[in-house]
Length: 285
Image (cartoon, one colour):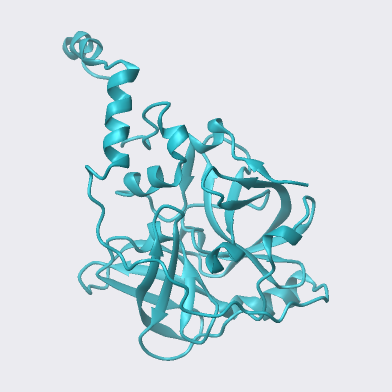
């Protein structure tokens, strides 16, 4: 079945999963330009309550028509709100090619692949307080893949699992598609053995997620492939029914044989299990 373009109503209401404060520009960059033309798709600001009565008339008077909002979003597209510099896109590691053909129990799958999923903490100026957190999946002894919105603005990055802690840096980034590569600066990672191509996926397959929702490292979840989507920029997305929460960004999405098929990335606000992963094979395009 040919995947189809992600609908406007979905693209306009997604929410990242890694502690989204300060990531509005990065999220807008994921929405196709044709969708952004429909108006302001900003994430909601902190709830401040309704304006006092004396300000209500002023608020209505300041409301801008669609044309004015369109100008604002056009400014985002042309870089008026500058994003921090990140390394250019490249592919620093070969794609793991040992595709497994044997189905696993959930317990055996977790034991096999969870050592390849690392919690990511983005630290402020080398301090111990994390300002953002998510996950990353090792694809070589020194390289892991994750979402850029987790590691944007990072001064220091730490990877950790049950057995080790590593310092890391961003070595490749495509912010438009939210794909980033991390390289560890000390030690070695335990990579996944195989990455399965998006074109081989079928709706209805059982899938498993491993990530760090709410900071709970290496949490296992399960669900189904509920849709295969493609954005205007030809980004392959896997829609899943497996639960995702804040902190799940960058986590691994695996088939029932333990092959990596995606990186969990965003969910649709005010919905029931409308969750999405970037296809893992996209990281080698």
